[in-house]
Image (cartoon, rainbow, N blue to C red; front, side, top):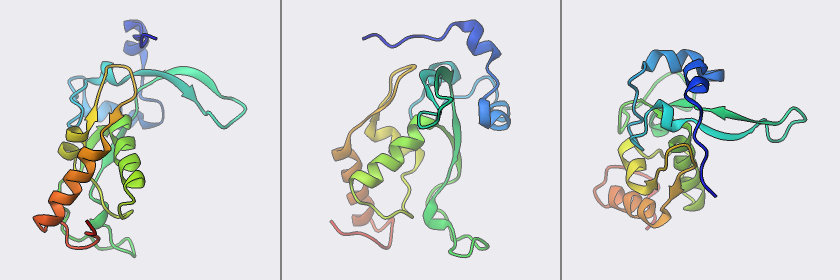
Length: 155
């Protein structure tokens, strides 16, 4: 099955749904630092509200502020030195980070950097990413060997 492409009129009218401020903040020339897709390529046809009675198919393109969760303090007030700077990434890259961590049973407070995510995903315009779990495991192992992360290294 071929991935549908959004009509350009739909993309031009798109305001960013629940992330409209971030959608506007990043500007028209935004490129996801992980998958290298632009705003138009991030847009995909998907089910909105899949677990609710008002579910429906729609074009969406969601962005997230991605940061090093290990730098979050337990009380939410102080921040430790992050391993990488906060970045805006697309929903599929943000999702790939979480999927890889769960599949590999990595610590919840660990986060892959945007560049590391880009090294273990395959991105297609207007579609979901494919995640290479072996590549994600190798990145995590390398970080442990280089002592880029101090805790939770178990391979």
